[in-house]
Structures are given as C-alpha cells and as structure tokens.
Length: 168
Image 1 (cartoon, rainbow, N blue to C red):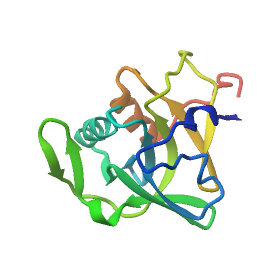
Image 2: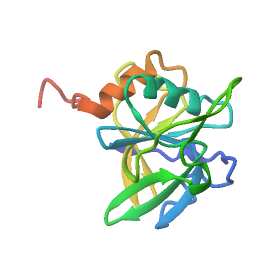
Image 3: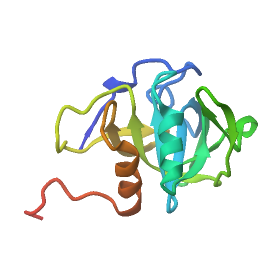
C-alpha cells in the first residue's frame, strides 16, 4: 500500500486537514463518520461535497451515525477513534430539509477514509492509505463513484478482496 497525502492539502472549514493532525492524539475535523458493525468510515470533502447526503443514504441501508459536520478524533492505544462533536451529537443535515435528529453510536474505530473531493481513476484500484492522527488506514477516493453508499456498507460489513487475488 502507498500513502497518499496529495488529497489532503486543501483546508476544511475547521482549517485543519489530516496532514495537519498526523502526529496528534486528538483533533476535531470538518467531516462525517458512519459505522457498520463497529467499523467506521470517516467521510471527508469540501462543504457541499455530499458528506451528509452519503451518510443519510448509508443510514437508510443500516449504517449508524457516529457524527455529522464535526467529528472528534482521538487515539485510544493504537487506534484512531471517531465520535460526534458534543454540540452536534444526534444531528445530521439534510440539505433543503434542515437538521434531522438521528441516533448515534459512541466512539468507533476509523477503518476507512472516504475522500469525496478526489476521483479514483482505476476500476480496480491498488490500495492507498491516509494517516488519521497516528493510525494508517485505507483511503478511498470516491468522488462520483456510482452506488457508493451500498458499496461502503458492504465494504464495512465484510471487506474487500486482496488486490493480488486469485494469486494469494
């Protein structure tokens, strides 16, 4: 796996990027996080990129909301954990409708980063990674990816095939 940093040079509303917080033990990012069976996907992108919309689609497919708009990250041992920012816990934005109430789960390990500002040019991409606080996790460049919500729910449930398959 290779580490990607080029997709995180832009500033989020909070003014912080994954690159800015790589060696920290805790931070709050402008992001959304959902979980499936205890595995979290941290969704990043500029304002209006569709973070909340993707989370709502995933919730409809059985995912659970960790936090929307601001996500509190902290290291627990060797794991980056995500939780809702306290002032926004239990809320998710639905553009054109308003703030909706939602049940949230507690702190969840970040297992994937989903970047809605970057597109994946390859049909079957080689794995790349990002660093969340001090943990390296798989990075998915997912702008304009068809069936993204369903694919992410399935990925979080069961995972994906090793790129070396069927040779592994």
